[in-house]
Image (tube, rainbow, N blue to C red; front, top):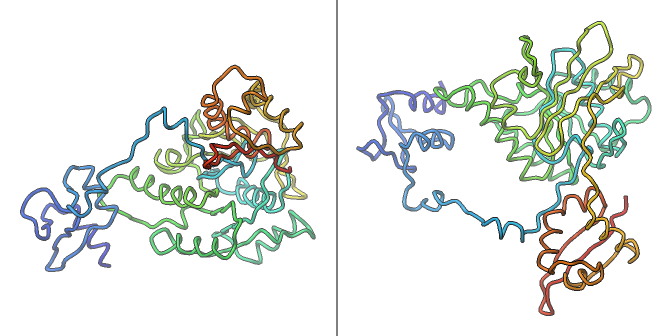
Length: 390
């Protein structure tokens, strides 16, 4: 048994002996003794103990016990980077799951999504943001990928789509491998991992619930995606048991879909048919269902219909005014919020206008192709508005 496995087992052992501690409260700097060997707590073990109220922060680490807060009023004053889409109405930076039964066509769909993004081609009429893509096809071989790619895309390979058939796991160094790839391949916006199970380790924390293990694994991947402002798409399986809510069929506990920013379920009602359904739900976009057809000649998934109408936010009168004003200014404008209020003939304060633009920065960027930024100089606070070339 490896040392870290011994340590995990010992944590669940009632005879565990804390190091340098004779109370029931354990210091973060402590470990424990088992069979004469000394072990230090892992970060995950500390998290479990802290939740149980058995872990106290050491004096030198007291700052870890303090969380930062912001008032709602101050929140409106912040200008955050817009959440740009990778695939319009489908994928944006964050963590997503694409699940389905074995051999339903998940890998074909994953490769099709990656190929579309790598070339900036529309997917079912949805715009994509062109970028480099890493597709980790961990159940495949390069010869099989070569055959599949040629069948799907013929003599048009993408120079921005990178393929791998083996990686480390979450515990043995996957994050370092991905970080190195990003360093060597800037402008990578999409990483596809096919499948999730092949990057997971059998046990992280014996004694912890299955939900905790599932949530812990996906939280690692979500943190990596958020830190690098990119999208990770995980290919996963569904369970055999049928459910009226197809999203409850994702294999594992609710810790998996709960930790993800979005979930897609690809399923067929009739295995003898080429028709399938892609049920979609996420934190960023409205729920929808795509009806797809798997073309047996090209092996691509083609859009047949959308089962429910996609929600389209109504036009915003103020943002429409900003857009029209910017067009008249040849797509570029700089000035104060007070001046913009005057130019647009708005019955609102400069502060209220700044807050409105802050809150609607996503819509300015994604719907109107407007880059909005601010700068504080000695002469005052300036707003910069610029039309982005499509």
